[in-house]
Length: 405
Ligand code: HEM
Image (tube, rainbow, N blue to C red; front, top):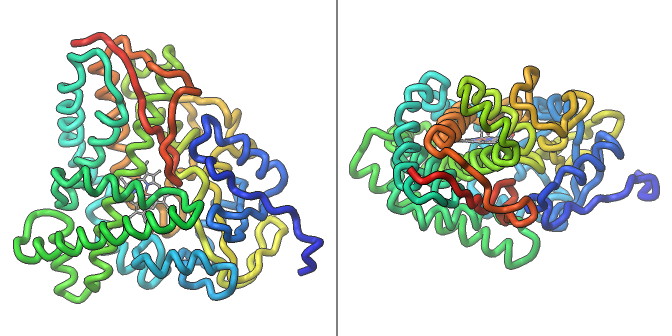
């Protein structure tokens, strides 16, 4: 292709996920066209798909791989370096490996199995609020949105909750934007620490089988359905994916409510509206905002643009979820939005395995806060709030005051 004919490259802003409102940048790209050239923060060139209908189609298109090891050319140099440090997991493999790995754990995350966890999630939420309620003030991210999903995924996997200070620090380092060599080194070190941690944990499950998902995976390993490396990387993926995102969903959701006291009261009066409110939190400002990565295995035409083989493609779930061609008044928060097939959990074969669990945690978590804390007020303005230094979108803290009880 003649370089002069190529459209301009948009560098992804280093602070995109930390902006009070990152959506004008995504809106601008979508307005400029359905497929845009971008430069990722690690310097790689990539393409961004911005419209709802194209993201939906591309997420199920087998010509777009989820495996960065499929990249062979110069385009993928950085991604391949990063992938070389990573162990392949279901998130970064294609069929048939993806299918085999996902099948090993999918039963634990079905709607029915997750529904059975609801009372326990509620109990954990109540216990956290018992400690907060008498005080009249709290940081609802550090003291509530964070420990709730961490406790749930620890119980499910069989990871000691007592180790949370270690693994939550490592997992947030793992998800820092890799803007420079120091960032890349931090991420690689965190991955190494988590890998060692899981290797030890797997060894101890092997010695003392328990009633948890990691022990089930040890059995699958003995039956030669997965290798040791795959077992460790599966544990790591489930632990990281199982809490980082949901913390953000609960934190952002509570913040959206605090900014809309009348809607907060409506939800308090009718908790039956909570499930649809949670879907709107996910659409309006979901944790996976910038997008999910794919790699072209052949030339792929999307909305009139041919993306050459061997290129990185970001399917922007955040841009798609604000697409005015799909959502009426996309920039308005409507907790009773009836037609809301957002893409916050992705789509296609890699559709979020933990979606049902995240939904239960958010409905129970936000519901418990509304039940237990009256007179709830945000103690910071939008400009004072800090967003986490992460590739995911979520609040660093949410200071609130309320009537002590
Ligand atoms: C995949 C979002 C919670 C486990 C994904 C994907 C998205 C996503 C967008 C698709 C990635 C892609 O297409 O490349 C979210 C959000 C969550 C959440 C927004 C919370 C609000 C969870 C939880 C778990 C989890 C609680 C629990 C274990 C996974 C796994 C995958 C995945 C294992 C990979 C699935 C596959 O590749 O087949 N998630 N997630 N997620 N998620 Fe979640």
